[in-house]
Image (cartoon, rainbow, N blue to C red; front, side, top):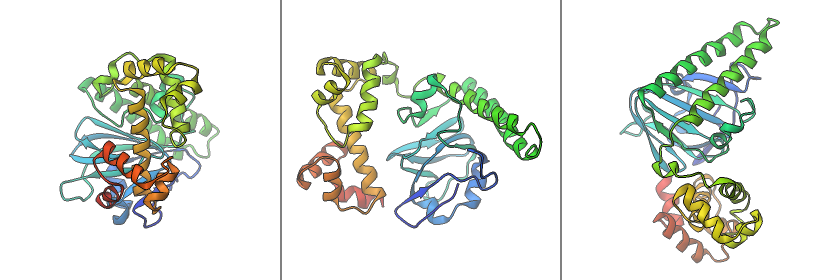
Length: 299
């Protein structure tokens, strides 16, 4: 992992400094702290890869897409590609001193895992407070991944090097399936999943949130009535389809306000608002902040 630029949000492309061709890296949080520039540690950043952080000791608070995420013993954090994050920090704003292990991996490194797809596609939770049993199971799996990760270097010239990489890939798959089996940290998500209607809506929303905020439009695109779509959304999340659409647009507005230097009016236009005043009223309603106020507060 490398850090580039001096912007308010730092883009972090995946690069394994020790094993350049390997799509996974395993390291401690302390090792990350030692190699990270101070400016990057204090800034919001946007990785293009997955980050899993299992905390064994210490405390701090991270931020994922503008939502605080507590980091304490037996907590797990998952940052997905494209999400805006701040690394775990202590009360003074400096990087937290955590006893934690990180697994960084590209979107293409895990084996095909249909059952874990909701975890990887951007819709899964950002953090879990683990039960003792779940924590021990994940820690055992991470210990195996760590051992095989270091074995990749040892067997680099061996005929079995490819086998070691494939074993590492499968162990990551085991870890992801264990995560997919965890109870959702939001009790509302324990509702019935909403079925195929809700799944189709989620993917269409990711494709089209900048083009339309109309429930009827989304319903027509996925082949259901607006009433059926709203029922499915309420069953899955407790929120209406309109609330989910507006929340996704507001999240993208927040990302653009912090991640880019685009004028507020340009961001509003990119998200389908013809007038800056309408965009401003929308963001105040959704977040409690004006666009300019949110940008200043985050920076």
